[in-house]
Length: 419
Length: 171
Image (cartoon, rainbow over all chains, first blue to last red; front, side):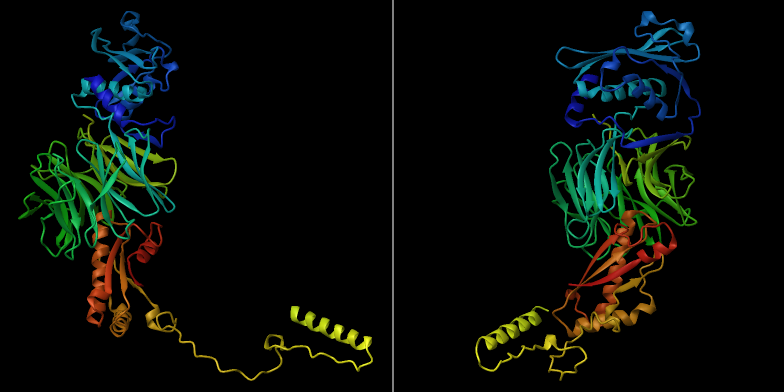
């Protein structure tokens, strides 16, 4: 199974730069951190990436693991482990990597329970030489899932807009900020990137035609086409979970209204008919409902309606305005931008209890999206006057800032699991 | 200067010619052109075709003003801008061949998508005043840039108030 995923990576990953495009700072810790030690893999010094370090950094970034320094000890195989030396950790990750004659890389790894002295995981992977980071992320995912029961998101990607002066770049990067690739570079603004459910396409909005127009672009072929260029503004694309349609917002009938359209731009159907602003649609995971933001009641609030249209139920009642709703992957809650007292925070609301939980505290946080495991939320914020990205865990405890090397970044969206 | 030296040359050549022969020296008149006349010499002004200052760009004309500013989160056209917009509406009414685009902008607070919609609403509100004042709907197009093209990207009210704006742009 790992091999099949690696083969998919061969299609998706391009050249990997040495430097991360984003610097990451972590604050906060999970309620209970698992102490783990990751030993440098044998032979990793011959590779383009230090596998052990990538795994350790992934686990550390999650906030759920406390990394114990191996302090000079370097076992690479089970028989080399002296368990009494690792009592401070609950688990130990060891392994080896070798470059084969044909240039491919073979990586073997084991995850050991230091107290029970047994193997928890063991894998051997062969892959192309430039896929070393991807393999390390996959191992980190496996360790994360073993201990938390949740799927790891270290192998996922994010999309955002980097703005430097008048140049706007639509970018896709690994969720740790490495592997940044420019998908589109324009002197005109770009906004609202939206990943297709299988991660193969991005929908987005640009102003290159003098007004907001929605494009869809393949991340494989890099080819793109216009999805919606109706009179007026075309914006806010959101994919249905089955990938068979998108919700978009058009002003062709005067005011911002929500429409559905096929991925090839055909079969346009109108869903909202108010004189108000109706925007920012988000599909439920079962594809039956849409959350959206509307000022039909005076202030901007979040509503839910069937994908057939019709009655819209108001969901938010606190604060001044609420924007940018997105369903959680399990459909039980949604994340949104909560405005109160002139400030903007990221909050989640449970559908059943209707309780809201405010997750950020600075007051300039926008454009939230969930990681596909529902445990982390990515959003845009500012630091020292610059646009940066940040993440917060869904319980609010672990926070991370992602600061670009150059320019300002905005409009982030977390991508899906790569199947 | 060039013409002056040519005149001098002509003068010198004439003198030489005069010396070469026994004819009395003829001094060739140095050609004078209006451009050589010293500034101090007053000339009879010639008839000049009157230049019409385009009332659209005449700084003393209300039509040179193109901006409507809005309160936070509002798309209501404030009273202080009505006479300016009425003037543009009337201008468009009497110049049926002219077209304008109204560009709506927002400050950065709120989501970028909501701001795109609000910018559209602001542009539409200005269009309404223009049409009521005489412009034909077909003469006025609207576009929204949301928060994407701020005039001032600082994060304070001074900048934000500049960005909450609809601009009339003559095509």
